[in-house]
Image (cartoon, rainbow, N blue to C red):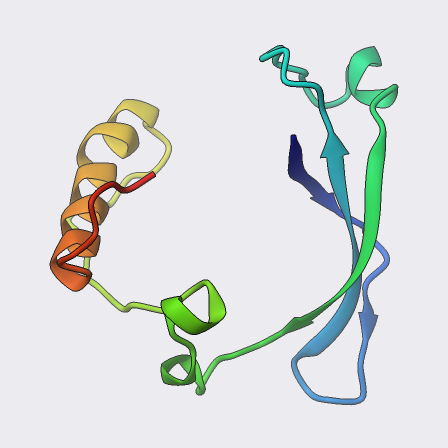
Length: 113
């Protein structure tokens, strides 16, 4: 299983405004289900797949990107949630709000993760 861990601190600005190159570290974890806390010995001993990626600022071009083509889509939506430090509020109320938004937007969607 491969999950993104962190971005390398050395980000290089590209000639194009709002674009940068970065190293992303993907953890190569086993499927053991073990939770490894950042900064622990187990975290330090992890294996990583380090990949160079180009990250682009899409502000002003949000409408150019579609979920079915690009794998993401920007949606602007007001939320009732004002406090994001309370985990139970976020996972209860905010997640339900986002799920309802996605189901309205993509009617044929069966399940949201």
